[in-house]
Length: 127
Image 1 (spheres, one colour):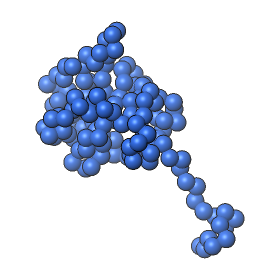
Image 2 (cartoon, rainbow, N blue to C red):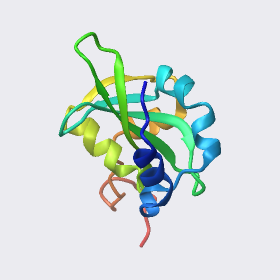
Image 3 (cartoon, rainbow, N blue to C red):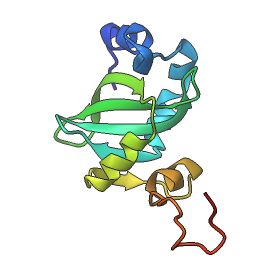
């Protein structure tokens, strides 16, 4: 697996989504090998949602490319999304390749979005 200096630099400095620390990279290979969710990328490759958290307590994602033998050849970038709803949208868009459904985070991502209660839905509803 290859992570360029540019990818590390981008992951640590680019913007609020790309804020990782050196500590984030210590267990990166283990977390890639035990992903929470693997999504097909809308471009090339895959995006792996990991258990690693950034300084804002958001899970980090790793954009990766594979070779023809399905071995990881390159980590393109590491980042976090500020809102978990993006993952739910990717689930809805059928981009999930794998999901660890034992994870609480994955359960939240796959949970249906609750509709607000109205008077007709619940007898104890009060405005």
